[in-house]
Image (cartoon, rainbow, N blue to C red; front, side, top):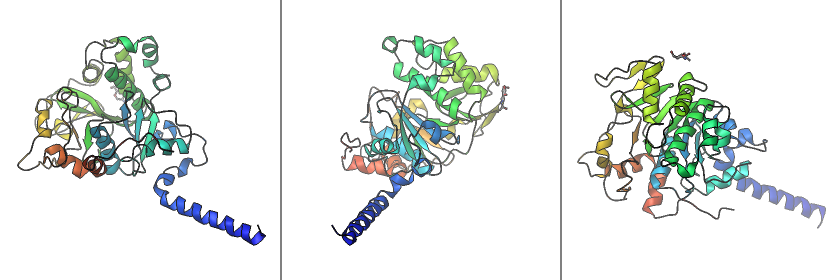
Length: 338
Ligand SMILES: *[C@@H]1O[C@H](CO)[C@@H](O)[C@H](O)[C@H]1NC(C)=O
């Protein structure tokens, strides 16, 4: 090949590379700050303290559409915040390419440049917290609620270490959450642990981890969850007063948000999400909606396109990419991503 020919072929390659770069701009763009690091760690993404955190503690990779909707809706309504999803079944992520491959295996999440996937490594995550000795002692095979209990532990350690906002994977985000250092009332005087937000290294999350270990009882569902948050709040922060109306409360230096912010539909009415309404509520003073997957565990109701149910309406408005995939019966998890 002549010199001219060589130069031409190099230029052509560059042009093609440029094109590829441009067409995958969205995925490449997300890695720019870390482009020259060999590793992408949760620390890189979450250390600014404004992250939104989701956790999947089972090995499943083919996720229900509600989980995908939860992550998508959070990423969509908070484009300025990193949305991280820690999944037990995910292989190690050691480079930008690994991150890209992981994300591309979830085609409904891949279009969002602020979503990051990480494997859930509990041993590393719980290190240097009161939870580590408990984790080293506990036998997951003998635990009756392991998926929940391990999630309860992981969310505390993550928010303690990095700060940010934790949300369960059955919560559909409607608007940004404008508060920090908050807990959410599921009902009067009862704190949820399905959604909460704190700055890093706050005493509340540390105290919860200590109490988690001290009073551990894996047989009681919620004992390490809502019950733990409620008893720590009552013991160390305030004698939680009942709500009078739509107001939020202050409990010591923690905001205790009105049930209307996340639970305008109470748990015992969870079926309402799967019903047809005459007119859909606007949920004006609500940040996100908890769909009560646990209450739904026996019936396993799902969003059905064309059903005109509240949940379909919520998907259409808040997680349109997930909705479209369900509507077209497209696979939402690909196993052969190069
Ligand atoms: C919040 O209140 C607790 C309990 O009264 C206290 O120990 C802690 O230092 C306070 N934290 C901040 C950041 O003000």
